[in-house]
Length: 93
Image (cartoon, rainbow, N blue to C red):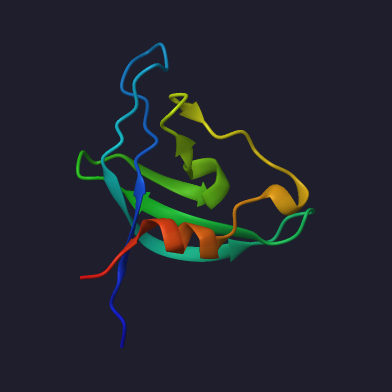
């Protein structure tokens, strides 16, 4: 049994102006799929060590460190899928 843990950067805003993000590694506690009119959405529940937690579509939980803002929601084939998330964020024990 492979017991690899997955992590994402915590997307929580740390100031009221939306300029500073938490960025600590947030553990993916569970993954699931949600139906939508555009097709199934890969979703996750994440929690960081500071106690921030989020529950929603993976594409809305991923943010760009380069711009300090959330990644805009993509449409069609440009959406990030769970496989690319796993490849970028999985850390073996």
